[in-house]
Length: 111
DNA sequence: CACATGACGCGTA
DNA sequence: ATACGCGCCATGT
Picture: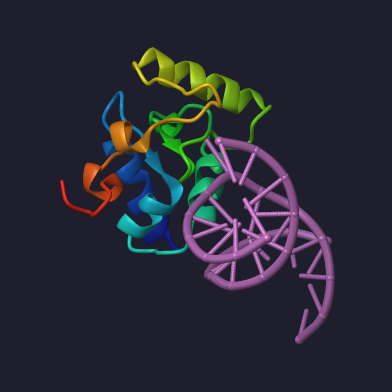
């Protein structure tokens, strides 16, 4: 992937406020690379251990944590809950409520 | 070039 | 709401 892609995505991830979440697809689009959702996930997975980015604030478009069953997923849920995010019984997050930026998660794109 | 893989997303059943 | 199939784009074999 182009450095521009990585730069844009990583910067966006850093902009996600505590207690809020964003999704792969939305980040890709905001970064200027629509339909590159998979690459956002790829990028986050390639992040080194000592990074300061809130990678855990990124979930799938359905509001669920990716790669269930892995330590990453387990840890991610804990971190999100620590920021006050609530999970449904099926382990999903309400993007309508916690999604960031809000414009990207409102029914008609209007706030 | 063909085939397989991946922290995804959407439409349909 | 859940499960399956297919599209998407880059990378490795």
